[in-house]
Amino acid sequence: MEEDGFTGTFQSKVDRKGRMSIPAKFRRVIEEGDPAWSSGKPMQAKILYGKHLGESLQILTVNEFRAKMARILAMPDSDPNKQYIKRLFLGYSDELTIDKDGRVVLAQRYREKLGIVEGELSFMGLGDFIQVWKDENFEEAVDAPMDDWLEGRGDHFDPMSLVG
Image (cartoon, rainbow, N blue to C red; front, top):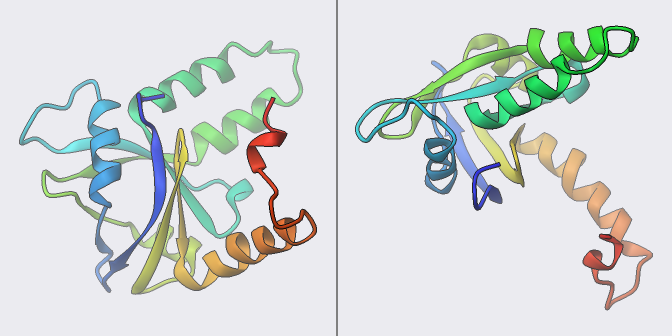
């Protein structure tokens, strides 16, 4: 994972043609994680759209994708999960080209997965990847369950107390 990783939550608009901007803070991480990138050139990242992601997408750096792919390919061929994981992770992934100004065209199939033609998207940095949601689905899939999870834990609950 790149030094600082992906952190924070941002919104961005996607238009009818699928054009949108990757949040600037995330672009710095994508640049770091693209070994072929140099100043003024487009950045490359990987986008995942497997069935396990529901109505969301994931964006990873090239380096992070390669590291995860190496772990998957290193699994024993006798492991019955290997083929499914390969299909979900490698078979449902694609290159994402981001121009020098941070713009990208989100293909129709990704917009269909998100359930959006045009409108607001939510981008949430989760360390080693970015989760992308249609704004309305973000509330239902992320915010509401988080509120429920926190509700019974008391006013002074420290989530880091659960981290080993």
